[in-house]
Length: 358
Image 1 (tube, rainbow, N blue to C red):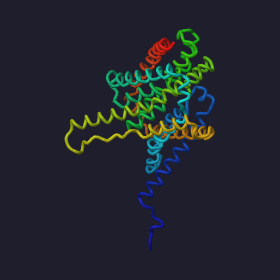
Image 2 (cartoon, one colour):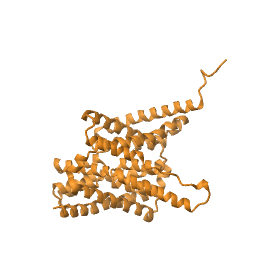
Image 3 (cartoon, helix red, strand yellow):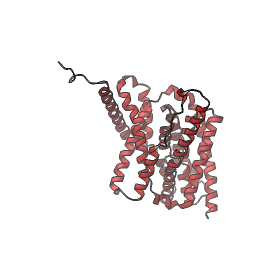
């Protein structure tokens, strides 16, 4: 008698386990989304992505033992492959027309802030704070570009460990939330010496998450909020060239390291150009050309936010707090110094750009 009808193959068991793991992360992310919608949390500008990684980390470090081992493949899929797909579709939130509204001054502020913060953060983290390369770059990326979404994009390119992303996201949450209260206070106290355009460029060019940008700039004026939001989206657009540059740098570093070793066992890992960065650019172009109806774009953005929440939740589940503690204080100190730089350096950049283009 044949038993093929009652016995499943190992590949089938893995496939079913992966599906169960993905469904588990999806249900978890759905609960996280509802939690993030509570007024007390939404009012602070904390996105579902942030709530997801925190809730996932709490689960991963307390109840993870109850998760079936064969579901781990689904959790890993959500934290890796789904993440790349979601980052690509993040480009539907940006259009070239919007970026053109802030013109050359807005683009200049964004480029200077992103490049200077990335370079300073990477050097400071590795050389001064003695962080490992990936943790230093992830902290710099979260501060320089667009908060948690940038950390996710860089994590995927670096192929780093989940706890390193968790450390970077924690820094983004802390200082980005502080910006929502500090920036309007500084503006109304007259400390910034910026007009409405300058305030919009400064807020959008230096605050981490778009929700935090809106929360801060809405205390200035609707016009400043509009400019700040577009400025922040301009920084998001810079993900593409920065990720391509990072991929080339990592590949060169891998070849150099391999040259110091002997034998085929130490052949460098080939790091291809991150395809999701090209997907991101394709989505930006599609949004700019209005390929999709407005309702379809809104629906895709909602689905994409949920997919990113799933990815962050999965990263949280895979995060080990004991490993976070090792780099936590030094990474937080790095984030604080970068935050001071974003305020002081970003203000100087905004002043200088406005004077040049006046």
